Image 1 (cartoon, helix red, strand yellow):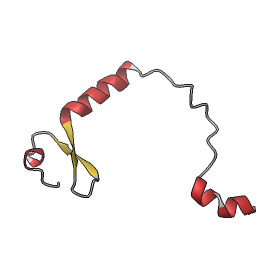
Image 2 (image 1 turned 90 degrees about the vertical axis):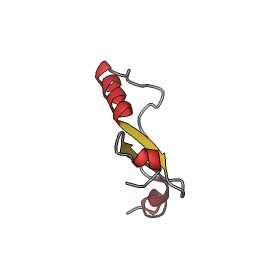
Image 3 (image 1 turned 180 degrees about the vertical axis):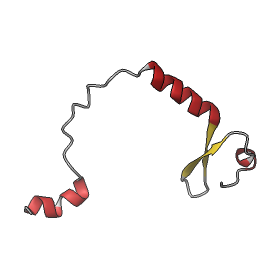
Length: 67
């Protein structure tokens, strides 16, 4: 194991070799799925700042309880 792998890899992670400027267009199926998820779930934030998802209509989002 090389020195860089032993000491730097745990902190920096593997190299990013993809072109971050090149993106694939969003498909209609991905848009439909995102719409369904947005309609069925709501994101709540705990007092410590972490977030979690709750299905709409369970009553948790109205009362602010954790699931």
